[in-house]
Amino acid sequence: MSRENSLQKCAALLLFLTPAFAQYDLLLKGGHLIDPRNNIDGPRDIGIQNGKIAEVAAAIDPSRARKTIDAAGLYITPGLIDIHTHLFHTTGIRDAWAGDASVQPDAFSFRSGVTTMVDAGSSGWRNFETFRHTVIDRVQTRVLALINITGLGMMNDVTEQVTSDFQPKEVAAIAAKHKDVVVGVKSAHYQPPDWLSVDRAIEAGELAGLPIMVDFGYFLPERPYWKLVTERLRPGDISTHMFRGPVPWVDSQGKLYDYLKQARQRGVKFDVGHGGQSFVLRNAAPAIAQGFWPDTISTDLHAHSMNALMMDMPALLSKIMALGMTLKDAILRATWNPAQEIHRTELGHLTPGATADVAVWSLLNGSSVMATPMEAESPARSGWCAK
Ligand SMILES: [Zn+2]
Image (cartoon, rainbow, N blue to C red; front, side, top):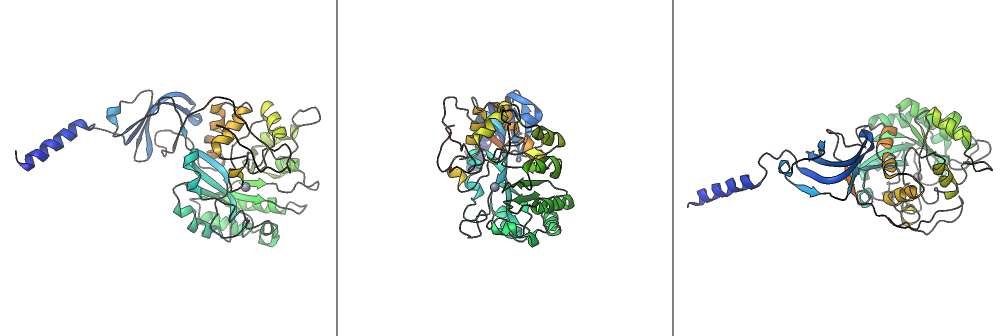
């Protein structure tokens, strides 16, 4: 047999062995899909082609895919969207959120089922482009950003008090220039007893057509929290760190305050933002027990929270499920709900045609131990959560 004949025969054999008409690059077979956007909570096979979801069906024949992964016994969800993270780790500044306290996205995202991270205002309108150049454009994780209302973002607490640097027009201009990655405006850590940081952020949000997220920072009698959520924030704006200690949750009888429901009725969104010590059990437990659940579950990932009580998204989901939320409800709050809040409705679901951001999970049942700060200002340096 000539060498040419032999090669032809070999090629024919390969053609025979490889699914000749394989439509899909990848098939996830036998898993349990939770896709709240499409109201799916059951067994589904998923075909993926060119990085997009091609088919979701009860059964897809493996001969239609070049590669099949056996997902039997596993859960499949859209890749999680974490709308509160700190990723501007390239400034070289010691002890700053936009500095050593930020983390490199790829080192924390995929290993915890997260495919989209939103940096929550680590950079401001003056240094956002440095953040983009040194982080956003260099990583595999989809990184989006809230722009801080102050110019230098979270370099330290001082920069967030420089009211002359609160410039809505500048923020809106940066948001328009980088609209592929900018999804909102941030106000955080503001100390004076007025509303300037919040009001300027809202002004920027109006100009840019984007939501704002507020970390209320210092709780002062002159600007009570209830006014923030029932009067100041617009529908679609986000109050993060919802379970922080100073947030008034329950009256002396242990009943939830009405203002919270009024705020929700107005369309204000409540976000977890666990962080180092912003998930206080005496607030979170009655809130979840009385049905006031977070709209979104986010980590406030930074170099301190990930080594302390928060750890990562799976640990946080476990913690909230331990307080009474179902898996499906928790996944909704880490996929489709955050996608809608940041106006990125192409994300957070596995509809055919959507980007194939997929997470595959095993759910471990058993007892776990979790630690949580009982008081807002209590030190929260150690703790763990089994998952
Ligand atoms: Zn934060």
